[in-house]
Length: 382
Image 1: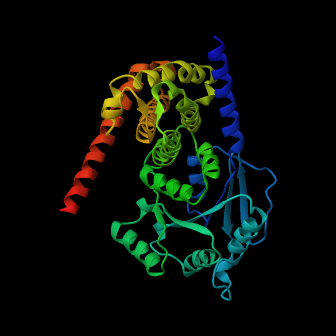
Image 2: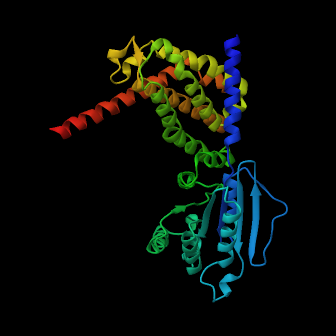
Image 3: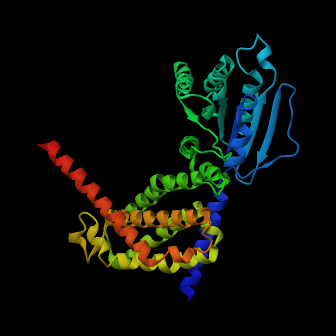
């Protein structure tokens, strides 16, 4: 009983620690009138409009805020009539001013250009180039692409690329007044994440609407490619000097942190009691069994060590496999909630049997990749 109490406290501490590390990024969404800026904000983010938004005669600005993100929607007014301007001067000034004012917060710019007009103004191109020149992180989002033919869309993209503007994404709205090309938004979110450090990334993820598959897919990709490998490397450090199986508990703190981190990213930490129960019992039981059972035999090169020690390869492989299992189950549970399957319980998905099966699947895949790499190396040596 005392052991579970201590473990529950450690899990709660880890949840609080992760929550306190989340940082708040700034997204600035700009472009001409009727280019779909508001629709994108409403579709992607859990934000509310700040009532007292600072206004400018030549620039329409609206500020949307949440606990995890600040989103600015800005729109140039009447500048196209000023032939002395080479680009949307007020847009650039606003963005650069915010970049300097919020130097502790990362700023990402999404520049919206409507494809329905079959053309891109020189002001839009010049504005994007001016922002890039000032080291702003800018992505062009071609909106309302359903209003343009494929050939016109290709011409618009080519026009941008000729001017060396290559970070381009597309969006459209389907007949249900919803964005139908989720994959493009996934790419946009992935691009934005790659421009942020991990704690700003967490802020952006948390700000996305929970009921979008975009958020779920982006999360899974980040966890598998960034979070799990980081914990696997840390586990390899623990096993750098081979340790007896009897000291396998040395791996558990890192694995607990990883499990909690993954569930936190899926926003499942709201079910604190269920998370504590699963991590402290089901997951830990599975880890214990895997250290003495058939899972170890799947890890490449572990046969001669079985029954004696855990080395870096074993520690890293087991942690990676556990991370894969928890990531996949977290994805399945979250998707069931998005799909409206409220009768699906957290405990129904996070079972010892499911975790072990997925760990075995991950280890087999790892073994196949390792064998393939070794085979290629042998061929190259011939």
